[in-house]
Structure formats: structure tokens, C-alpha cells
Image (cartoon, rainbow, N blue to C red):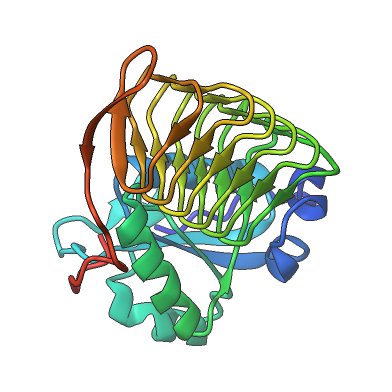
Length: 249
């Protein structure tokens, strides 16, 4: 069944340093799209914020056998977004780890008329001079320092460090324990693996994948995959637009 916690005002980090709009300024009903393990963590962030009267899921793979995740109800699939808006749900966040899938779902949810929320765990530290784009989530114990800019629909995962003057493009995923030193740029759709490090001024291209534990010294080309210490190229591809698939999961 739906969870309706005891409610409190939104955290200053979420309200003051993001582009969340009205989604964290008043009590709202929140839809999370994607009921995977990542969805569990996102739901926990939303609940910890204390500014949503109801939290529910939709999922492409919703079935009659799974109608809840944790204590949150799965209300159906993406075709039910308009119906949920009519029921009073006002905000959404896409809780899917895949960057391309998350981007497609983000665009579709916008077209349904819901507003993108920005979720920031109360234990995250976000400078008043940093900005977090709408539809993004910042997990517990993460740090975002002055003049860092995080795009729309991004994941800043548990205990990641985004140092001063970093720029992160839309639909990127910065995994748990990543450290981006000052002035690092990360392109849209890039995925930085758990525990990876990028040294000051490093440039990570659009759609690039940095393997877990890798250390980026200077740059990673767009749509390349690098691993190791120091990071070395193991694969690259040319990518034009999002993969032409129907599912958003």
C-alpha cells in the first residue's frame, strides 16, 4: 500500500540548490519510474526528504504478481502516468540506472504533464554555489562543491564527490564512491564506475564509460570505454542519438 509518512519541510539542499521547482516546496505526490534495486534507493531518498505526501512506482515490467516494492505501491506501467496525474500525482523521477533508458523515460514523463523532481538525501552536502538539474538524484553522503553544475536526469550515487567547478551533462551516472577532482567535465550519457577517480581538469566525453576503480589522468573520448590505473582504452564506438528501442527500462 502507499506510504504516507510523517512529513516535514524540504531540506535546504534540495530546495535551495536545485532546479526542482515546486516539487520540493510543498507537499506533493511523487511517481518513481522503475522498481529495481536502484528504485529502492531512490525511494529511500525521497522518503528521507519528508516532502512528499505519497510515493508510488510505475514500471514497464509491472505484473499482477508484483504490486509493491518495499512499502510502496506499484501503480501500473507508463501508460498509467496520465491517470496518476488525474489522481493528484504531480511530480516524477526516473529511478532507472541505464542512462539511455532513463533519458527516454524522462522525456515521456515530461510529455505526460508531470513535473520532474530533484531528490537530495539529507546527508548529502551541496554547496549553496552549486546547481543540481531537475530530475536528478543525489544519494546519501555525496558532496557537491562550489560552482559544480549537474545536468538534468543525472544520478550522483552514494558517497560520490563532485569537486569545485565540475560540469556533468544530462543523463549521466556517477557511481558510488567516485571522486571527480576540481574542474572535471563529464559529457551527457557518460557512466563513471564505482570508485573511479578523475584528476583535476580531466575531460570525459559524451557516452563514455569509465570502469570501476579506474583513474582518468587527462581525457576519455566520447563513447569510449576505459579501465585500469591509469585508465586505458579498451573499446570505442560511434553513437548518434539514443538506441531505437521502445522500452524505457
